[in-house]
Image (cartoon, rainbow, N blue to C red; front, side, top):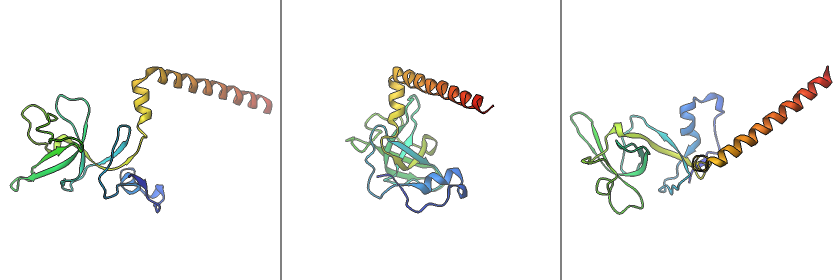
Length: 163
């Protein structure tokens, strides 16, 4: 699963973007992603290969899809790539399974948001709970506001004693 490397360079010596690629890594085993996992994505000029886990957008759909690449075709004349994906638990690839848009047979680079380079299991549940249950969000905001108000009062009382 995802893990933090034991030996890291001090954070001050790293730039923000490479930081994620150096701290969070994947084992060579296939990922067992579940709802609520936070993915770390990276997109560069390295070729996309079969077995990579990619996040992509489909025209007309609002939520990105996370699936594994099963085939890659590259045109030699213009280096354009065509990618076919499939969900690990799906029986059919994404073009036969109806994931892609109408008439779409392949993904191209502009559809792909990034390649998964690591993940934090379950960390996304906070966002899911706050989005799906607005009452929890309001209770949390209220509790944080109460803490903020009471901490200001304490600070003001301590300052008045010093004067």
